[in-house]
Length: 73
Image 1 (cartoon, rainbow, N blue to C red):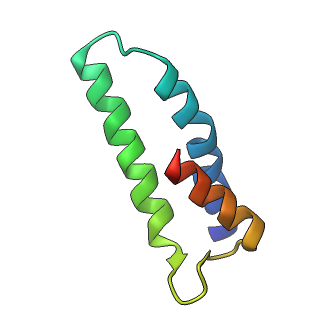
Image 2 (cartoon, rainbow, N blue to C red; image 1 turned 60 degrees about the horizontal axis):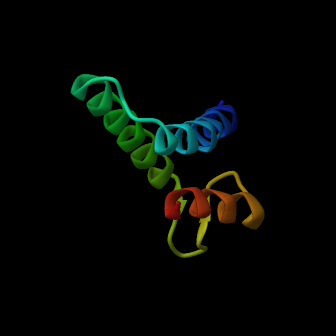
Image 3 (cartoon, rainbow, N blue to C red; image 1 turned 180 degrees about the horizontal axis):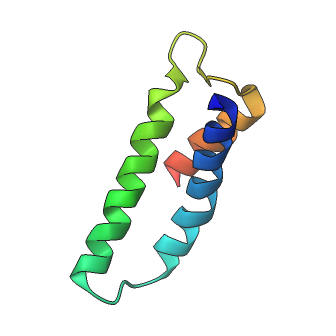
């Protein structure tokens, strides 16, 4: 279950952030919704980060690197 949720959040971040960055929201409410969704996804992703190993729970180094790249972008 946790692995499926991790993959779902990661896929959401990978898909949502680039499209959000390229579009101009139609209204301030829509813009605030994108910001809230982005914040929620980042907070969830970061709750799975293991500082001692530098990896995210249930991922290997490659997928952890992808997650960090998404956060940097």
